[in-house]
Amino acid sequence: NIVNYEKIFSAFGFNPIRVDGHDVDKIEKALKTVSDKPLAIIADTLKGKGFSFFEDTLQSHYTKIDDEKLQIALAENKE
Image 1 (tube, rainbow, N blue to C red):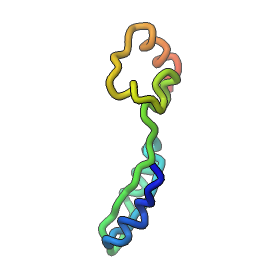
Image 2: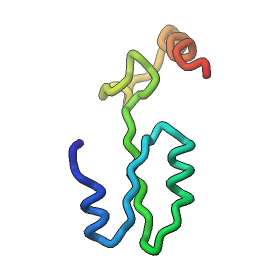
Image 3: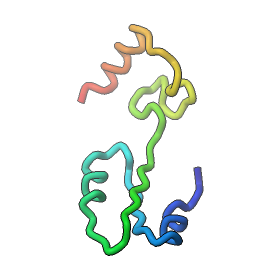
Image 4: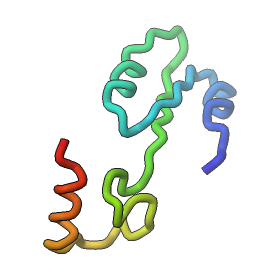
């Protein structure tokens, strides 16, 4: 979605901060931001991030993962 959320939040008096919604450190840093305005954190995310068979697909919202796909997901995300 290409909506300029920063511009919209700014128009309502917020201090908008855009972050990678998959990076916990960046989210934490944004949460610690000091401002005289209300804070709006805009977290850019990707559906199914980190799962090759689900990334950026509609199925990531409603499909049950079978045992085979579970093993693939676990192998891809060993961190």
